[in-house]
Image (cartoon, rainbow over all chains, first blue to last red; front, side, top):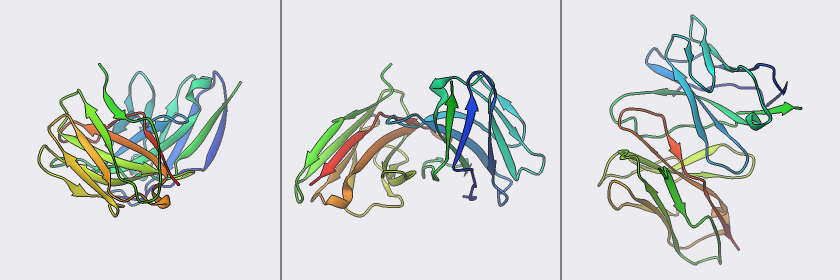
Length: 113
Length: 112
């Protein structure tokens, strides 16, 4: 799986958009970009994933650059409950997809009131 | 819909004791996983099961055994607990062919 690089921590004001960057310069053509988050003391939660097109769901938007070497997770109107560690993961989907996810240290996003 | 349920939520063991962490999912997922998370670290994969009847080692399998009892249940056993196994353990499941995993709330294990 391709290695990802994320900032260790970020702050964002409540109500503003939180933009979390991720670099994955060695990504392969068949690798997807996944985002998970982990709120303190809870299990990780899936947010969104994409291959090359931008994606949006009820939680967030995912913007992937044209060369696919980086991506940005956008939380459009951050709330205090969005304070968490956010993990960017690059992963092939194929076969059973069952050999797990590789979690790095992620970005600790702190939403300020 | 309970999702992924782990028991117990908390456990304290003495060095050398054994125990089994239980995990069950009600989403009819084929794949199940066990991870551990140490303070300030990301999650590390211990074992996974692609389907009922199959299990494979992950990144940190030493000191652990697993059983995929049926499609719903995937247990993790510590035969002789060591202080280095003090951690938070997470079970997860995912549908076949995807990496959208659903996680339990974790088991906080302390080995003294």
